[in-house]
Image (cartoon, rainbow, N blue to C red; front, side):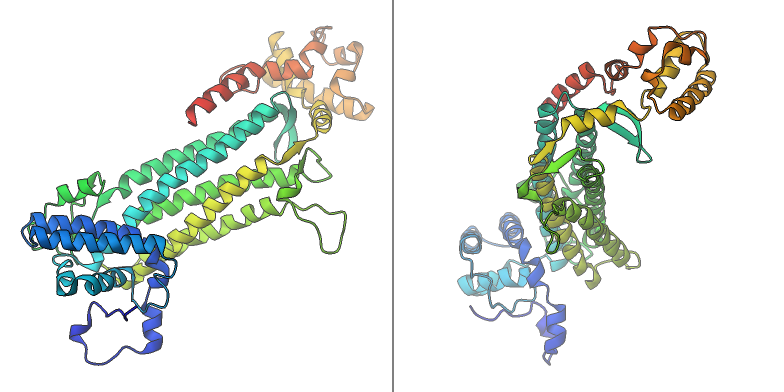
Length: 461
């Protein structure tokens, strides 16, 4: 393959320092934009033809060559190897000139690498968000599958990592389902702002040729065109928004990972990870480590770093384009890869968890998690909640002294604290009544969770 020539060499007599040239070149990173660059170039060729800059024959010849380049890039694994191109745009143009001669040099008429890369990046990111939507939906599906398989299982719910109130395991799954649903909504909103076309802004001042930008945008699937050329070539807030959305995905996955890691400890013993998604210790033969989830939890910080790196890069840049912005792609590509793999691993983990139902039932039935039920029982008898809360606190202290659960106290022991307590209190303190009383929308009552699972399944399609 012939050596690619810089797109800007006419002003210079000497050669670039080799070390600087390597530092300056971005092809090893932005070659990922190859298909987007070719697609945008094909559409731009048609726009030049419609503007009378190219004849129909010239346009057809260029588009044919670009389609060949695209096919070579898709099918030939060695196509990009050993190429000295500065960036993906130089690579595509060099291949075009090899095939069409001087005609290929005319394609860049009226455009700059500044609006070209901004357009390529938006095209790539639009597809990436679409792929993310699918990956997020698959992760949600794994949560729903797990929830439905464990529909009858009860686990302790926690606040401050202290046992609080019992909840259905399916309810726990639905909490993470909702988090990922909001992530999908956020990414859809980001996509709407990504899907604006900068092409036609040229370097910074706009194009001098009668390009029909709106028709060009339509041909590339954009919903609109940028309204200011300075902003169009220097804007990367769509990347920041994407990285912010990625960071929130990783926060949610990290919290899921933390729960699973805790629940698989011997101290909790609620879950056991399958061999497919756990590892062992090089020293201690008995160990089964939740490395899959620990890595997901750890990679969250990496994605946060991508966001902070881009924010720091952009914060002091004057208008319009500056080479600092070349750093945007590494951050975005890394975040996309990391979040994609983390979502896939999380989904695999959910399909490889065994639940210790006896352990979760015992844990859900003790620790005075029905104390609030006793307070609510007193409220239904006419006691103000604050007074009921005080009374139950004293009952709990007494139960602790006696080494009993609340429902193990006899009626006389309970009536020492309120004469309103009657034999029906034991039904109110039962695990099933505790769950069943949370029967409003969003609660953990069995019928409510069943309905929520059905709705979630429909909404995730």
